[in-house]
Image (cartoon, rainbow, N blue to C red; front, side, top):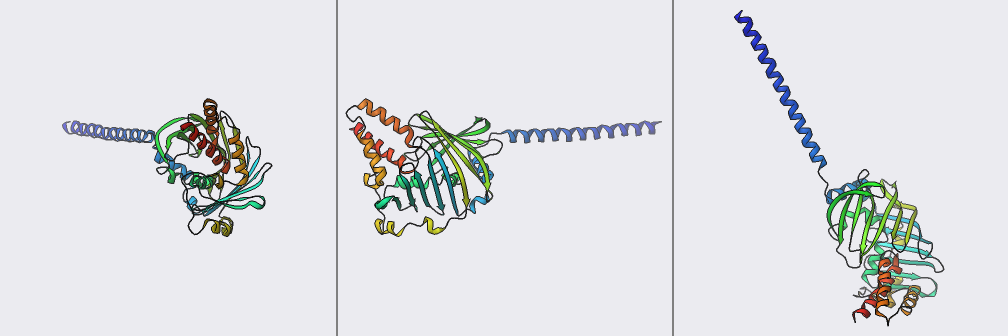
Length: 338
């Protein structure tokens, strides 16, 4: 009898201990799962989001791109413009634009020497103003986006991350401020929460807001490229549709600085701190002169209003024309400051 009761007690004790072990294991599993959920739910950082976006665009495949070209059709206040951009490592860019009533305009740079080729007998001219050279480099817009991590920290100071919808999709918003003069002072870039691709940006320049939307992402050579860009502010809407994008197919001779430009620039290209009228191509120079002539120089209030109107659009007008508007703005600032 005693032996049977003892055996029964041992079985009960064993069953109880087994139950306890299983209960502890279950509790540990629940705790681990809860911890993992909390970790997963932790808000991402700007650095991690930009890294994820770079990976989504192609990751290692991006580093294999040595050259890139694109053809785009753009609608805007100046009419329809066809733009051809060629880029090659490290900083060679050539931009050809066909403008209404003006024909083909060509600009190029190797990051040090800038140049313009004008239609007709005017031929080549050297660009000496660094801001204009930077503007040409920025026309390879896809390359700048693919190299976003390089610009964060050097050109952009990223701030807080928020969650909100942008262009109809849940996104992570990364607030930033610019470290470079002449650029939008601040803004927010939006990374799609699902695809991790950049859906667009909201920008602020001189108190005026603009929205940029990037659409129709397609893979080329293992890398994602957007094929439509929409830019809108309170004064105008611009749409760029990319009809052709190619990678690693640019002839090096196409982006080489022409011998005529090297001869004009001399062995050491000159650098100036401010823009000069003679640095612009003849058609753009004529546009600047017409704009200057039409300004109300004797009416400070009207001149300020004209200046603010140009400032809201200057950063969104492409190429030499946008730089020309900044030149006129600088001249207005000299007048108002005096």
